[in-house]
Length: 441
Image (cartoon, rainbow, N blue to C red; front, top):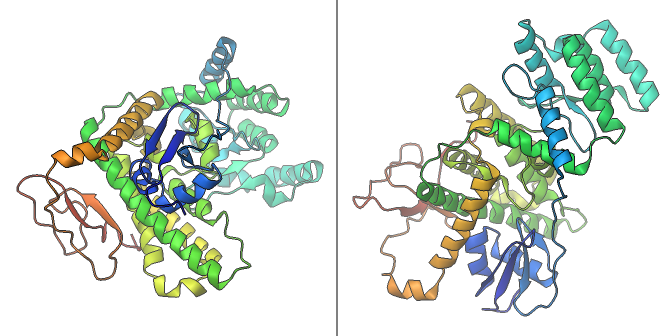
């Protein structure tokens, strides 16, 4: 743990900026990374979230993430690839996962339905005798078990299939799909997709599928983002506390990646992808030093807080059982919670977060810089000396008394049957985030 008051330097993962904070807690307030994580990470110059952390005066420098160079040829080929794979609605007829070449079968069938005017379902394709025979033959040839050729999505998530099976599926969809998907798969399998072109193609997808934002005003967005950071911090502390208690009770368990796995479920609940967050960002052209919450507009920020709260509540409701709560049983429970939230979004018309409620990359970067500047200004001792002290009473909750979030007055985020009295001044109040959605949705 860092000595009290020792300054911390937060460095952007790509090396584009750095900021010095008086303490780890001050750094946590601005970056959203828990202060205990920052203090531990500074010793080893570790990266957490979108930042590297080190103690002020440490002469070491991190190895920065550098985006591959994108040539004019890369961009031209990427645009051609995008437009050749675009369906009648202007969206891609399918997606290819860069990590293993598997292709989005769900999206392909949906696009074929739109293009052909005849419903195409992957389940119908899969039950065909010819498909069964093809999968068995491909399994023998490729050295896969049959079930490994199809990654079935759960809870409304997409199904991905082996690239060669994707070609067979495309032939079933239509002759046009067969030509375009075959070309895509061939280029992937022969190494014809360069890194630069892949990144350019991802950026093209981001540009074509993300509308120019008619966004709520930036001031309101910054408030929501700050609220989200506080909810994130509460959720993170709850999970890390559970991991600490469980690790003390069962020292032999390897929980080194547990937090990352749980956090990935939250992003999946919001954006319906089946891969890792890193792969999703690669596919959408989102820089790795930007987080998923950085990309959401105001509506997306609220939905992110909803999911964060559900996961937070799962752990805090079981606090007295942490030592005996099996982490993988908990993980499976959280997967079910993820699937419930996906169904909830679908049933209530909120299934468009990834297409209508994400900022484009330049706007997200701009807002992130503004938020960092605002956070540094708010933390300034000189500014604090000019402002009156807080007068708002913090409401304490008898079951959750250490995780608080700033919310708008008027009952925006209140428990069932509990309405916050509106603040005549219109200012924000501090209150416990007790319930936005209950665990049953």
